[in-house]
Image 1: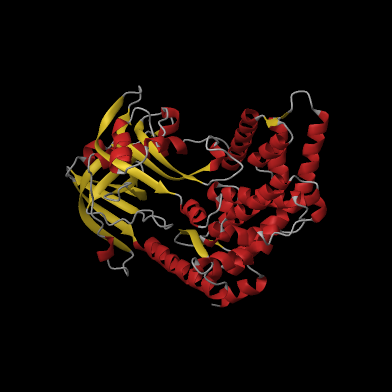
Image 2: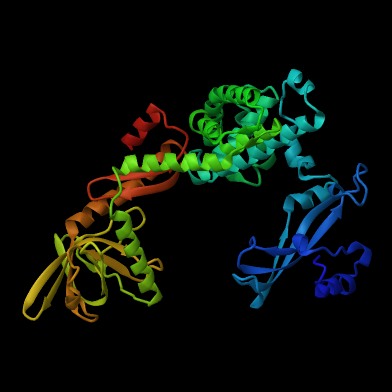
Length: 496
């Protein structure tokens, strides 16, 4: 506990009844929690440790003690200049390590010795020739990496995460590839995780039925990803060995070589760091990050065909939406009351907010609003807003519509309405006219996404999970996570 936290000391000693010899008072580097060194909630903490009584260590050795519970007394707010101010509503953030409690109840020294992990580790079949050359602790470490990464990978895939080069998909890819490398160091040249899957299912399937339900997809994804990396692993390792042999001066893998391993051979940079560290080397991460940024920028510029004003306008729209949300601007959607058989449908409304954009367009909120905003993968309604004032009538095209972040108003993007602020005073009566043919096209393709989802789940199984969609008046795109479909499966989906 924190050395200066007398209140906690008094509770542990006098209310809980702990022997003062069992209460260790430490400095803020050990027992004061905060979100880094920046501003935000923070406070002293108490950590509870279990004496494993491991005969290899004395009571003074950290390795003998297993932390299994932590309590953070969230009572301060740290300001930007470092001042600690009392929170108006303090609280206690408490967390217990479930697996660590399991290790205590089972009389084990750590999580990896518990029954679930041992049932997996015991089924890892290493190459005896390779194993004989490894220190026992190293052999055990590689097996623990495989078991831990198998569990993480299986549950990610069961939740609909699939390996790719972005976001959580890339996290999964890195986890799988670290495990493949650990298996390779044990002399395992085949796909190790997919082969071990039955052990994990046997240990955890009863408690987590989604693991059993999505067995085929999980095994297929693991096997495909492992085999793909095994094809490039040897080439990447050969390149690294050449680097280690030829550049012994600074013992640093250059950013360019690290990027080559990442871009060409599929080595996540953190895996390169691990391998380099095993050889007493380091990686020039700053240079790698710079090269990666430059590569992304080249790709982005190539894709876009050069810079445009779209980003600036998008920023203006975002700023206006946030401003109107803070000002509690609202509108009520009335589009469902419109007859879907009409080609065009008009509603009388009043202007609630208006803002000009730098490109000559403008934004407006009208209430009630008949326009459906972009959402759920479906594109927005379009149409016209008509203003009659001083015996003059003007029409402005509705290019698109978006919702405020809080969903309480629909913002219309009006083409060519810049400089027409006088026509859009708050309370000004206008007419909103929706292009119903476009809406009908959106509705048809929205329904088709649900039919496609049902067909995929019927043919492939419940392992199919929707990951997004794009609904347009004349087409749709349906994103889903699954193992690759066969030609036969595609044909059955089309028939349905």
